[in-house]
Amino acid sequence: MDAASIELAPVAPDELGPTDNLFQSPLWARFRSRIGTPVESVQLGSPNTSMLVQLEDQGDFRLAYVAAGPDVVVQEDEQGRFLEELSVQLRPRLRTRPAAEPIAVRYDLPWESPWGDPSIRPSVRAREIRMNFGTDRHRLQKAATDRLAPDTIEIDLRPSEDELLGSMRPKTRYNVRLSGRKGVRVTRVDVRHLASWHELYTQTAARKRFRPQSLDYFRTLFDLAAEHRPDVRLYLAHSGPAMLGGIVVVHIGTTATYLYGASAAAERSLMAPYALQWHAIAEARRAGCRRYDLFGVPPAPDAGHPMYGLYRFKTGFGGRLVHRRGAWDYVYDRESYALYEAAEAAARGYYVDS
Image (cartoon, rainbow, N blue to C red):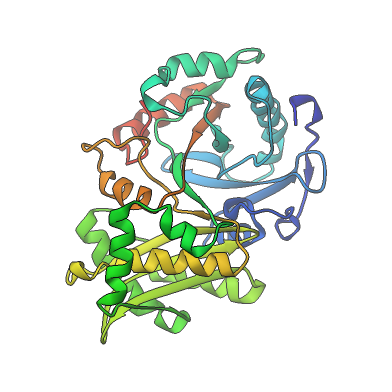
């Protein structure tokens, strides 16, 4: 797709095109609306090329946010012009809301980065110059923080289970089998178990110093999945009566995505997280999924990174390390954006560009 082919038209969130992309799906549109985030949805030129836009209040500012989108194929040398034209056409549609006009639209881009190896990645300024090449207004900026992790591990589920086990690192494969020998049981459970899982999840958040989502947040997601039939799964690991951990995995189209996890501080030698992920991977394959997304790792094995432990854990399952473009902002109001950018840079999280 190129800039000249964009012709925005309104579309109901329930009529978003078929997708393997959770964050551009009808489920996510309903979910964000239900938890109080205004959403707009548009077609980009044909019924099967739609985009979901969230309107978020960030302190004194409003930001339009496109998670994992636009989910269309655009040649690298056309990406800047495409985002500019899309943003220009999108702006009057965002003005229809009674609240303040967004100061910018942020795209957490699904497009793979042309610089996979972080050691050869150009500076932010050099990437901005390249992204804005050929644009008329030069208003595309690399966001200080990526909302969605731009780097992830994707496992191809088409090989057999034995082949998937064989592609793991030896230590990971050993831990998967060790958990079974030690009697760890993994089961899929229903929403009645959500509160007990959430208690463990909040304990995990306190231990690992991240901000947890509320129980109502998860109840809303599971309730909507039950109403509209996307497959949102909760897996729990037990040893005897003790809950050792649990994960939330979403199947949509041919992709399974691991979204949230919790683990107990005790009994770590039982290797429950390995059992949980392997069970979810095997179940996704049996359900017909072709890809399992482990959803977020640092871009490189940097022992100083706060997510280095996740890098070691997730890369152990094999798969392909994917580097995406990350979050880019098209700025509408330069003065207000400068204030917002300074505040955001002061509170940057894990997914920080450099």
